[in-house]
Length: 235
Image (tube, rainbow, N blue to C red):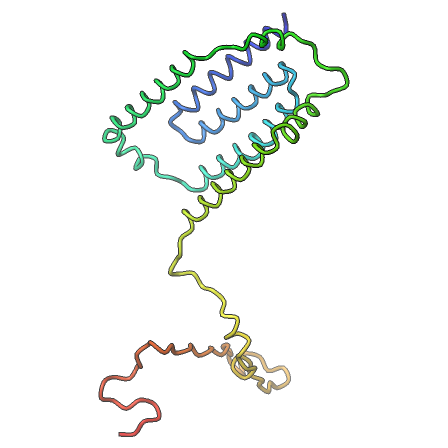
């Protein structure tokens, strides 16, 4: 009786928080409702006897994914008012895609059939000496190891694609020129000056660091004007 009441309680909170994730206008509130949904889903996994999945859901999704979503939303400071400007324009396209997806879900649910032995397996007792974590590991890393590795490769390709698509070359970026740094002489950057005893800035003045001359590229035009002699040239 208590387990049934707890199941309906966590299920109701889960459905309410999931609906609030979609309907909340504030993205920060949506992420907080998502975290609440994850906690209630973990409680349902505990009731079902899948304690390993419950801990993974809390540690991975709540502790990493949801917190990362929250940090990204708060740090990017996205102008959601500007994003909603094209809502009326793209509403017919979004409604059409949603209707197609809803129709596909109805077709899948309409043709769904339970296996004849499903009810018997649901009521069967858990094998003695085998924990939930051990049974799950045996299925993933023994029976379905190939599918597990393929799923990992797909996620890695998606991660690399996201990095490539979001990587941008900035004109203000400054990079090191290792060959130029190794080829410079001590006299180009360092100057030894005699400083008297107790001679501060009042005597010597403020000494600025020496500027390293910028290299002139082969395809750059010379700084002197047309018809004027350059350095080392005589008219």
